[in-house]
Length: 206
Length: 209
Image (cartoon, one colour):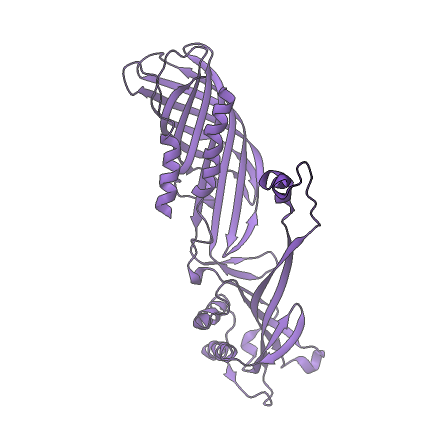
């Protein structure tokens, strides 16, 4: 079952890598990636394990050969189960429970991208600002409490595009980012994380 | 055109994402599911009590109504497990009529939660599923009377209540000095009774003669 899920997730990403084409100015390009993320700051109180269950999609319109603007949509699933422990409740009761934190973030960001080079291997920097759907469910045993919210989100990112063939328009995309999500619920102040993506970049054609 | 392409690319991705979410409940082992909740009277001095008595049957309470008092194998095992824990803490079990300092009763609690399932959504497109033409009435509409399905979920728990009998006469009250509650999957599994009682007492170190 778990293997099927991994295959399914990977298949969606790899299925985009079927293309060819030309320049960047005036062109819409998509980058579809698998994403990993490590919680930072307060978020580590809920989950401190790195998640490899994520995807990231960038759709960027080339304003010119170096500058682009578009949309970044992502998804990351964070999960951590803590061993059974006794917690104090506000009414003075003690509860022994296995607590599981399940957090999904779905950032949607208006993004600007700057390519430091317009041919060959292309390092780039990008910055996105927008929101993130946060689905946070805390389980005490099987009993769930939801703390869902839409929060502000910002994401600076550095990456590199490596064409599969010289000056090719389809290539490998590797990037690292920091996603800032202020989230003042359930005793935490943010759900920020350091992320990394590996995927395929390609032009979208009519 | 690009918009359509985008839809076909992105929509299935996010549809598939649900299957990428790690299911918290599926990842719980059997002994990780129960919850154990205890609460003590902060004014109670448990070292002042020496003896206790346990009711020899268990009250079955369904939706806040007493159904019966019974002593099934499960109930007997639970009573004995609680008695063993109390004795391990230095208290002495005595018969009901021997003026115990503490009285302990055990209850099985069942609460039903009922909801409604509305199946009517699928009727909206019924003309597409089964064109009235099929029945020889082209151009007709279907009519569906309102029908709903209901479901009931029963949630169960075991409650252990400890009362101060030693000072009851002075206050005219049977004051609860400690309570323990077990709920969640596995609560009624006989093989887990000793673990239930052990965990309830482990998190109550003040329960000591």
